Length: 366
Image (cartoon, rainbow, N blue to C red; front, side):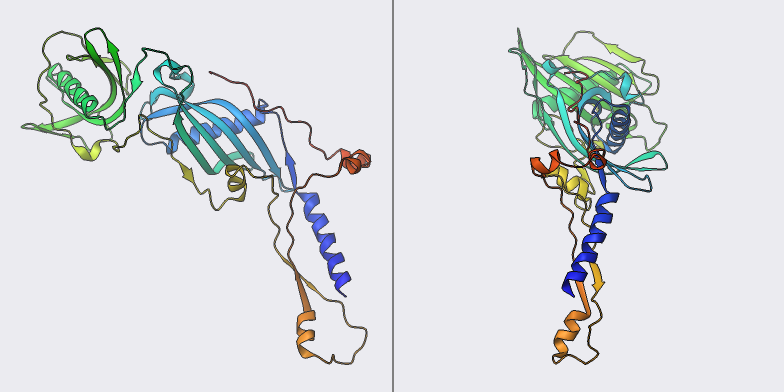
């Protein structure tokens, strides 16, 4: 009786295994590239502070196929920070990746995408963002934490100088994007990037316009005491002002509305959104933990027991209840087959063996 139940369970298990297939295309194949670019754009859309990220490398790709064609793509990708702010409408393909000597920022992401009717959609992701410490040159600028007091004072002085040079418009600080410092002849030089927004001012207090049409732009400033400020507006990306005149730095005249300033923290960069739906997706959790490949677990099957040969009731009612049905949990786990079995496998089975994967893919920047 038990043998019959196990035989049926194994038959069903074989059917499930036949329907599950894991493909490993080359990391530079068109289908991998398509999925990676969809993931890149989606991650940038979730990133509400800082800069856009560009795809640098596809580390790995797996495609879990099912008979209905709605396959699941699991990617490991590496991204690099660009100089385009997330509010900048410039396509990320036209943005410049920040070079190593300016402290490059890397994002390593595991992304799960579902393909339905030929359309790829991200269902889960998990990212880690960190500074690249490779090839940091002696004497190069050093990235400062975004809550660095002297750096923020320099940003405020830069904003004041900007507003003094644009009498018909006033701008408030929306976000500090980057701050760095460099030791040069004459003292400590600061290099900053910050986002501005058109503001209404009453007396000394300026509040950003609560209007989707309010002008937004990004400014860069540098100097030891007196900042040199250059800004470009996102709508036109044309220079707003070239405030390169020399003279003593003026005291701040604009009070920043703190509700619009980016989160203060001790990092020198804005991180990618860390995760979305990672714990409810079996594909992503396996990838994130760097565990062995596990095919999704099939549901437990309840298999009715064979009819007893005798019509007479059993002596023990409890044993009858236990034998009325038997729950056989089925867990499908990929394991390495012995070499002898693989070598002697029939030709029909060899056709289902995935080709050797060419991964990781090419490096696009560094």
